Length: 259
Image (tube, rainbow, N blue to C red; front, top):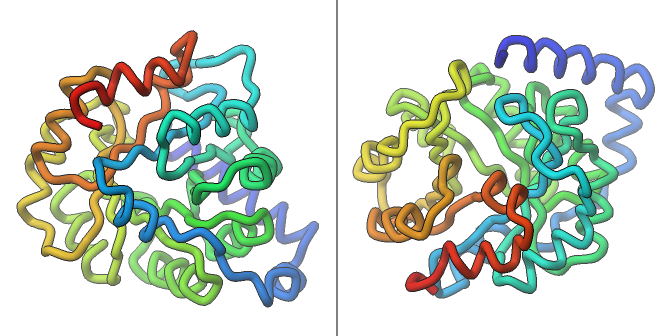
């Protein structure tokens, strides 16, 4: 599945370049500077931060939320205490779009992360063109040179790269390119299986001063308490919120005894 997603994404990027050449896109965002710092938001929350993810569907679970109003959901998550929002912008597999990200940014006041399968620095410029404050970069799908190039573009535009890892080897790559915000994904993107011990394995190998975000498979209060005990700074939660009849109540349930 991951290989299919990446191939699809590469084709999409080439098509996008045909519509909006890279030089034109660069000119469009020449003066862009991300105005809401993800790193600052996670550092200053004074608690285990929540990055609430907005997504309509997923390849592993299918449709998550039939009545999907991303702007309202974003506002509700902010009201519930989320320090940042993650917006799926992949259309083919997750039912998202860059326009959704731009709309969510316009009607909320917390940092907004573009979550997608970034395979080319072009997509970082796209993120800026749609007002993203941060962008997800997945070590699993990026050669180190491309990862570094994406990070350089993000730095130039004032967008925070959150670099996602699943293994110790990937963590070494993330640290090697100077990542400040590291996402530890419990999900193996090749098999889509969840291993809740990944954070436990990797946290001791991360030097102090990095911001750690635990991702995937967090759906119960005990999961949240365990992540806090392990010393992560934030959790990224999507599915558990999107399938909940009342996402705000789900946040309250998940963080009971933690906030």
